[in-house]
Length: 272
Ligand SMILES: C[S@@+](CC[C@H](N)C(=O)[O-])C[C@H]1O[C@@H](n2cnc3c(N)ncnc32)[C@H](O)[C@@H]1O
Image (cartoon, rainbow, N blue to C red; front, side, top):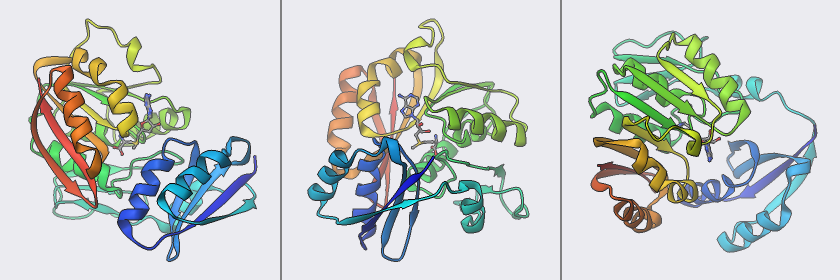
């Protein structure tokens, strides 16, 4: 399969984040930040130039396109990957990095084409807010598990069981592999849609780092799946969308607890 590389010229981090959020609804396979801006890779048959032109015009960010041969995304990632340490409490690294000292939790990840290494503010904020929750003996649902990073951390924090779902086959394969690598035996990874999770099955904690569009669409499903007294953590929200997410969560029945903001990305905590 050949790929199209889209090279966006954008210097400001906020504009880059907004661009990435808007592109996340399209089927891109990989992205890399460069000195000039952002490179995005899409399988050529999936390229929707009308949608990309609309985003480019709306944000006033120009781009160029180039056809490239299939890339080995693992190799690319391994060349560039630096370990991440979240607030001195959790490290995320590749298996070829030594385990850092002075961290309570340690996660080894090979992301392939999946999202979730802790480098992105949306994942890092989720992990920071997870640190403040009591996971011991809890049943957890990780909606949009990606690499499985949050599900693995939930188990390490003491969860009794974790169900992680994703609608992307690469992510499922990768999350299963990462669970094995981290000996996360309490995590069950499934490709099932959220609607197919039995209504009778309820969770103490729901983690959902996806995007505004999916969070709004499935707010009522998440409410039905959360036990009374449970906690919902949402991420993948831009600052300008706080009001719309808060209103949607309140309409579903959730009560706002707190939020944290990093690089224009917001992570929000709600209770039921
Ligand atoms: C931003 S990534 C988050 C990955 C990881 N949980 C993290 O925090 O780094 C969002 C994930 O949600 C998945 N996703 C998007 N829409 C979904 C849906 N309708 N159902 C299940 N997963 C979905 C994507 O494939 C992607 O892996």
